[in-house]
Length: 74
Image (cartoon, rainbow, N blue to C red; front, side):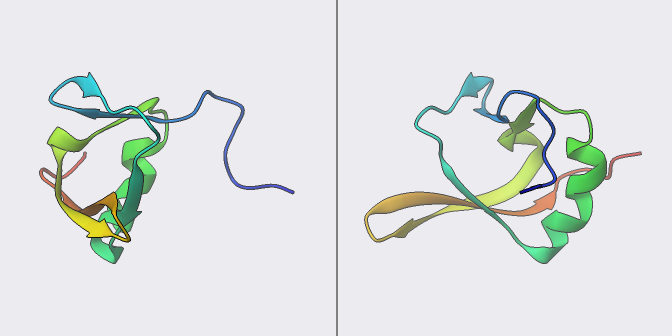
């Protein structure tokens, strides 16, 4: 089954230049999804410092809800 991902290693998530471990749960709002294509096209990491986001607890687990890119990508 094709999933739209290539054979690159999994996307790493960074916060303050430190990799978050344990495969964090990440969700994107519609505004953030609109910016994901150009941002993640050749990316190997997602730097939370470049995004507006908040943390939410769901069933005892932390989720990162990404809402928008802080600066427009050109």
